[in-house]
Length: 143
Image 1 (tube, helix red, strand yellow):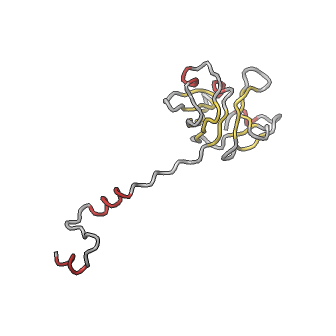
Image 2 (cartoon, one colour):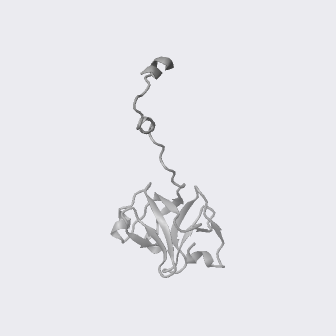
Image 3 (tube, rainbow, N blue to C red):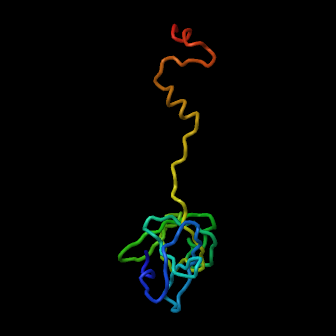
């Protein structure tokens, strides 16, 4: 969670899946926070979270300007550098460079299911003879 989640004067809550968070400035120019659906500060649950871009804003950083809705960025936390976000291009930016963006927590990625052909090839690899469909088992055993 970012340093903005330690502010006592503003209500906060942990961000949830499907909640749209907007990055905007607080009262002062230098302070930036993520606000959730309820108008409270939304705290990112842990480092390594994936955030999907819902709406992009104007940014002075050239790599941030190339971000499109639907792309996914990774949240990282550092003691010295604070909140950082890893872009799809591999670059890293800080939260103030994402002002005007709307983000939401992306669901955890699952491994894609293997294709049926790959499973069949893996199962038949190493077997000398393969039983053809439609033959009875006694004829196949004699071969």
